[in-house]
Length: 451
Ligand SMILES: [Zn+2]
Image (cartoon, rainbow, N blue to C red):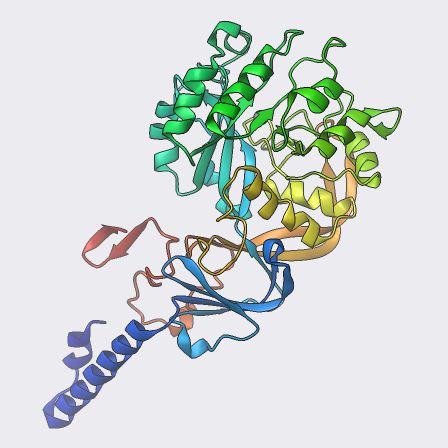
């Protein structure tokens, strides 16, 4: 606060006393701020935290980037900043474990290039705080991916490593069995343990199972799951064999409602899918540009074949088509009759467990304070699948607020911000770095200052 400005118009002894009083108050308030127990208090929202079995109105307090307390009432005087979230839903930051974000290489027609998008433009605005790239990079180009995207993103970016050393760069690469080597893939996964969360195999056109077998070998060596995009459909390799024999418990079958690999047979869920689930194989949505059909998903959900994880398969060809964003895919499951609690489970705690990041996807005390605040709107909405078929829905989620590591990174309606009428005429940057990370560059009278 520019105290010298306050003093300019004040003259005489009384003025000095006023200055002393202002200084004392300022000093006192600074001391109190230093003593607050919490940086941020999210008050009165309906918390949905499936891991901890919570679906009720709760206060959530955050300190130093982690969840510090979740309780029916937390004293607002203990917090530096209080935000009232009455009528809104407070959930763990959403995890989208099937995206394509290896942008920036300049390679055309490649997921290690132009088919990918930069994550930050597609995540915080829909409540996603963590994504897992689904195999854009293999062991040969993973470190380039890390340098170009992972290390530069504000989104938490994790990765499934493609079993193809060159990554997801088109048929010439993705059908080259010679470049599918388990050992270097596993070595790279071990080198970046925690960052590489699985092995991906995708888009293989052949009739054999070699890519799956090598991916499983790499996954076994590195103790991480395998995510499978089935590739071309051949009678020689039915999904019943993949799900019943080849995959391990914890491996992930993505694109589970595509229908292009006989996920539904004569209107019934393929018995191979049911057997896979019994064995512990996980089922991921992976909506994408070609992998979510109402005519498959609706009967499957009616037959209680729910996905373990909801994900987008975000890339340039899906982002403006039937798939819009993570919330749009979640809305589709609300439209099919899942409860909001069901949908949040499949967008937070379930995917966190699938990629063995159990510190994420929940609001336990001590967990990183990745938090999403959602508004559930009621009205007349429509949702389209990859074929352009429209299903009506009555509910739609909107992201109001997203926190990453305890700090606000997206705030749709400025609910954490001071009202214009409360600010001095010459205000510049508002907010407090203890809870605010909205602006990557803070402007001060001295000029831009990096956070
Ligand atoms: Zn994909």
